[in-house]
Amino acid sequence: MIGGWLVALLLVLGVAGAVRFFGESSEGALGEPDGSGGPAATPGAIVFGTLLTPERQVPLDSRATSFSRGDTFAYAVEEAAPAQRVYVEVGRTDGGAVETVQEPVEAQRIPDAPGPIAFSVPAAALLDAWGPGAYLMRIRLAADGPVIAEGRFTLAEASPSP
Image (cartoon, rainbow, N blue to C red; front, side, top):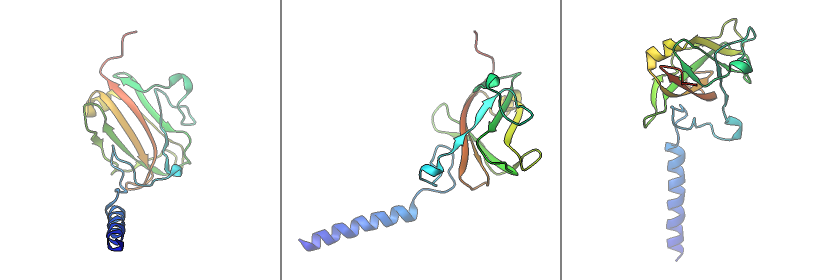
């Protein structure tokens, strides 16, 4: 009887050790947790829109999550501390498994750094590079660091009819 309990205990400890040793990756690939865990590790929100103010924020009246050719694609992490550079990862989320379209390997320098995390580009450039679809964007302060902000947006060839 005691031998059976001892075997069960060793089995549970072995599984726990294996999970700890082979557990989640800390790289946080798109579609997977970032491995940092805990409520304090919850990423902030990326705010999307069609305009950035001189203070590098997205005004309320320009906020949007769907963009088409001719739009400006702007985004900001308004709750983040000023930064020198960020790493942006983007994945297509429609049509099955997440497909990474931009890896977080090249740092994007913040204008007038350290400064607010905010950028704008023509939506046409993103459509040309990635095509239409639904996307997830994640921002990190280091290429292999935890995700500090994330948000979802859509790229469409044409604006929806009113």
